[in-house]
Length: 442
Image (cartoon, rainbow, N blue to C red; front, top):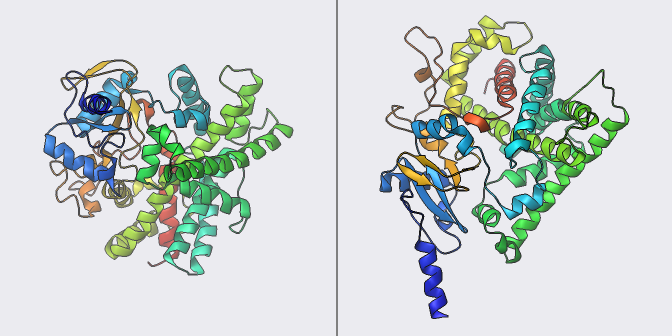
């Protein structure tokens, strides 16, 4: 036993040759016990301690690396994008997705599905009036819901339901009344899946723990929630098949069914269900959080609300709000960019994986190494942002009051795995703020 224990300890401490520096933590768990509620901040402190743009740490059975600044992230995900375009291999992911979807697949299947997704979402309304109409109607319903009053929790429930309805409309041509049990079921289970807890992170990459309490209960809840959401999508997809008309493709599901009828290699029923669920979960997670921080920031900074209201009144007036208006609204755009910077939603984003052995910043990174990007650290880099802890939309305006887009704000990631629904999310956030400011004085 002693010899075996020593062997395990030595194996734990061993790292690949010329690998980035970093903490090892505890056997099996690695540094997860240190994470707490804000793993991005813990990793940032370790990055300062090891003084490295690329840092490593141990979690589960794997050595991970973290990219800590925009230059390194751009080098890896954009300039060497193909090398870092994979997703980490996880038995739990494999069991949950069966190799389907868009978030956790890679290789040729991922390339084909991403191309389809970009083309389909663009055709469904990115930058078109039809999408504006869907969003404006939903936000009108949301504002009526919010005007009834209630707790902070009630506000977040309303935001979840509004974002879920917009996303379901685009993906499945379906919206629900706010008291519909199906809508409540979707939002409840997606909220559980996306809530960050260290136990979820550990069980994802140390699958043996799914048999051990309390990780066993975490695993069962994750599986149940994912199956519940997938079941709703499966039922709607079957109804779409029954009344499918190739000349009138109404939504994402219809476009996918059209590809299935062409007998495309990667277009199957199972792929449709997982792909739609991946898009639904991703959209609800990020956009609802952004909505919440918009409301909080408007409450905390009434001067921002006043400037936005003046811009809305001047540019939009009594017209129906449209995404085309934001080109003439520099302060609104600076406010939104500061929301993304100051309140990083995807603080570490989804992990990448090296698909081959690569060299990065002088280090040798083996094939199949999981890779995190510390977006929170990029958004709080004191060498780029003066007093980054302060919320100041004006920092994104030039001396003439024009909006300045920043490459140091990357809420939708960058490179090959950049968010598919970025344009839809941007449109939602813009129209949400316009509708809120026009109807409420927070």
